[in-house]
Image (cartoon, rainbow, N blue to C red):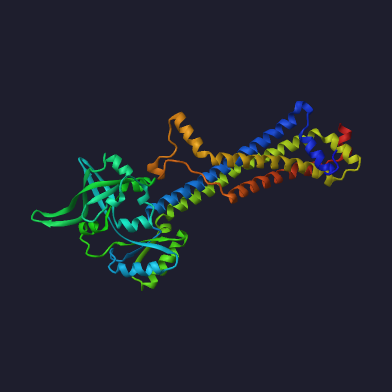
Length: 417
């Protein structure tokens, strides 16, 4: 026996390697380790996928939507130049971009679809957001005043069979008075570009045109719908846009990305919490397999325990020996689960893609989940939390078998042996 470790620890580890009854104890201990490893790995992978889904969704949303918006109470912003200048002077604001927004319909042949119309300044839009960088066909700079060109989402282009240079009819809700009555305002537009944001909601329902063209179409004279703000720290959007509105004297309608998509992100956090609880129960079941393992060891080694007690071993020494066994199982299973879980989380996109190709299935429908891939982000705090919970459950599982072994009376055991 090595002299650098106490005999209780040596004894506990030796019992786990028991070869009695053809190694059945070692086999059961191995099953406990494997069960704990799989439980920890699955929990880490699921939490990483939820983290990656939330982070990817947030980044894609912020590429096509503003961090915050400042709008007039009547739906238009008249003094937007002054508001823009003040916003740009506010620390934390990097860009303030005027925009015009309205609901509309587009028609091509017999197909008519509802879309969101957004009038933008191409130069300012390229600086403020990443949407201009997501143009996959055509040129964002083709949005010139008076050209009546538009950039459409990739999904919308696919549904309407649109190519560069094709034309479509835009119908806006504002009507025009004619001798035949009030008629919806329509305009024929030319497709100058196609963007792919990776977000079905925008790729299917958003078209971009020049700010001046949108103003002419909607009969807006110098005013805009509002200002879209880009911030250094998007998480500070609620406080920062409120500060700007107050500095302007109030009378503005403000919003931000956390408010516009609050329910969605809250549902992700709720789902993540519930999954952690449910999968922790699975880890708990695997951890409490240690109870049955240690109870079997106590029963098999009862004669050894009685002999040790007769030779002068204290109850605390027996307790330490059996606690060591549970701790070793928990430590090995938890560490193996962490390694396996992190490795799987890093490769989950490749694994899912391979499974989809092999079985010709699709796990995520972009029309429902906003994206079709399955990203994963491993957070150190999640790994520590999972490992801590798993190890704590394993340590808790050792209490009863170790206590039972420590209370064993040598005389009773030897008399019935």
